Every structure is written in structure tokens, then in C-alpha cells.
Image 1 (cartoon, rainbow, N blue to C red):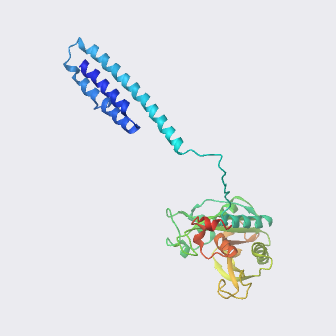
Image 2 (image 1 turned 180 degrees about the vertical axis):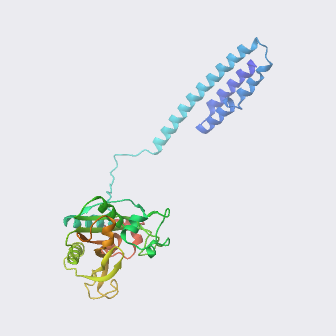
Image 3 (image 1 turned 30 degrees about the vertical axis):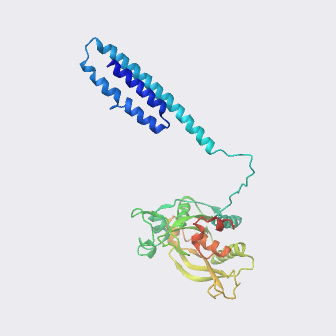
Length: 338
């Protein structure tokens, strides 16, 4: 058995010297020192040795095992160093070669979001945020949305459970803010929202909104119109005209949609405005008394107005973009234009 152990060590060292990579090395380690390796197989024969031979052979076997493990470890270090050197040589870069550094810039949606924030902050509004995973209560119930309203259908809303969903609007931020604060309030709530829409040129299951809210005493529809007309002129030009059309939203009464004179034809009528001379930009209205009561406000003492607009819609109008998908495809040829 002594001769077998010595021969095993010699063969292992010869194979070790010829190994060229870590995979080969691992295979050799298993072959000679593994649980089913050659050293283990030899040591199983110790049962047939005499009591006098066992200590000597056992000591020799341990010495050979330690020697081989040390040699394998050293070889591993050498191969790793070789691998590192090869990688460094392959990935070597001449830092003295002149290079062109291309700086990134803001996404067009971020540009529009920042501009909207700047306009309303200039009008005294505060920017607030809230969770994108929302409770049904804040997304619908507290906003006076009826149980049978189409917006609450599973075809239109991403539900996580019966009571938890991905918010379909940033209006829940308004409810959460009113619950925590007393009037007067002037806030805007920008952020991502989610609806179960198929992707096309004008729809996406994820998009961005800005909701606005003003609460105080003796707030009128004139205050609403004046605020939004200032926004339209600041965003689209001082010559921009506005109009308001009656509409319905469960959380405002009365409600309206706001149009601006067409950016392309200035009201003359063209393909972009479908020859009407007007472009819809947002929805708005006076806050419904039920919404005020839901947050503990007295609708006999305070009132207010709210509005909501889509960032993608504003960006498409301002930059003359006809396909919403361009905002999300990350095509550099498109993004570098802004």
C-alpha cells in the first residue's frame, strides 16, 4: 500500500503540472482527492493491514493528502493569476487615445413634468406624492366613484386583491393629503398611473398624470378657469385661447373638459385638431361635497376645485408627437432630439 500511495502522489503531481485551466484542475482534484477519488479507494484497503502497519500507512496517507492539497491550492492561485492577466491584456485600453464623452439629458416626459411643476409652484402650489399601489378606498370610494362605475371593472383596473390595486390616477394623493391637513390647500400630485389598456399610438397600460387640488373658502369656477388659463398660456404660448365644455366626473360637480386653440393651425382647423380648431388637454371641476365630507371637511364652510392632466398628452401636443410608444422605446434617435 505504501508503493500505491507513493505512485498516486507522483501521478497526481504529473497531472497537476500539465493542467492548463481551472476546469481541468477541479476534475483532477475530484479524481485524486474526492470522496470517491483514488486516495479514498486506496485507504479503504487499510482494513486488511496489520495493527502495526496501520499507523505508519495512515501517517503517510495524511502527509500525501496534505501535500497534494497544498499543491492544488498553489496551482489554483497560479491559474487564477494567469486568467486575470489574460483578461487584463485582452481588455487593455489606451487611455491616451482621445475620446468623445456623450452626456445624457432629461427624457422628454421629465422635461414636461418639470415644466408643469415649475408653472404650478410659481402659482403657489406644493408638490406631493403618494403610493402607486393603492387601496380601493382611496382610488375610488373616497373619490365618490359609484360601485358600478366602469372604471372599477377588472377590464380597466389592475387589481392585486379585491381591495388593493395599481392606482388608476394620482387623485388618491389628494385624499391622503386632505386627511392629514386642514384647509387651505394648494397641491399638485404628479406620478405614474396604471390602467388595463392595450398598447397603441395613444394608449399605454402605464402613463403619467398630474392632479391638482385647491381647497379654501369661497373658491369659485372663475378661480379654476383663471388658474388653468394661466397654465395653458405658460405651457403652450401666451396667444393660446381656452374653452371649457361641460363633462362628468364622479369627484367633481360641476365638471368640465378644457380645450386650447390648436397649436398647429391656431384655431383655423387642421388634421391635428380634426378640423375643429381645438385640442382637449385636461379634465377639471369643483370638488364634489361628498369628497370633502369623506376627508372630514365641512362642505358648508370650504370648497375647492381639482384638475387632472396626462403628461404624455401634453408632451405629444407640445412636441408634435403622434405616437405615445416613442416615449417608452428608448430609441436614441428619438430621445436625442430633446
